[in-house]
Length: 271
Image (cartoon, rainbow, N blue to C red; front, side, top):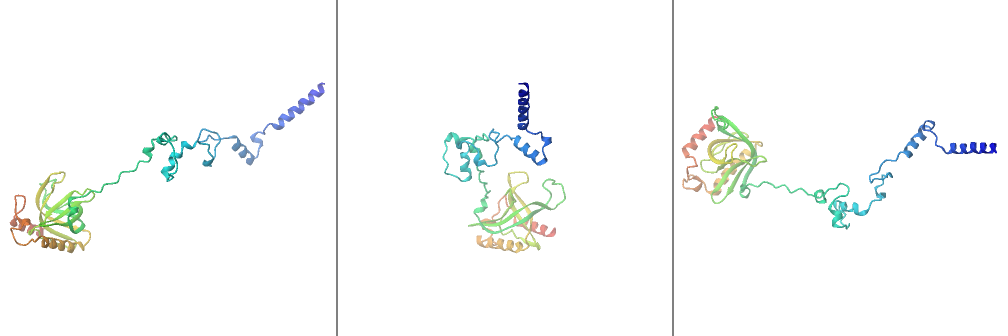
């Protein structure tokens, strides 16, 4: 009896020893890697230890994610309003996820409705002292860069207007009168005396300023086109030597012909 139990005990121990997995150090490199992959089960996206890279096989209720489909063009899905309101994954209101940026408004100026005879980019300078330092010596002071236009608004309104880049702030706004006589000084530059109605630097208040202006164009061909556009504007509104023409009538805001002649002479002297 004792021998039988001993043999059964040995056979039993032998059976259990055969079923017991070998230690990792007894396995070869390939089998050890396979053993580690089988024994380590990563945590899944959905709280399950069964991880799969095939998302179509995930056992997820349809109502939990079909609300996303319309965002990708699948309009055929029908879900309840309660299901569509928020995302079960991110907890974000759907209206926020589908928010579309408002269209950018393009700034429009009043002169956009005028007949545009000329338009080009240039650098504007004026002759005088710096507005930031009135005590400084006189010279050509750069006022800014932008787009200058010769615009026409009948019956008797034409002007040379220059707006700053991007901001469209008015840097110069000169009505075209008989006294406005632009002249070419360099191959890319014109100078003229004008009465400009525009805001001062750092201010939104419009004021008249009577100065000699200089326009330096980025394109040399623009000089002849600018001079031609000013001549056309004068012809269109009938500006000549007639002092009674509305565009030539002097007011307290305008300069006199003597002042214009003197300013033109000064601008020519210093160019």
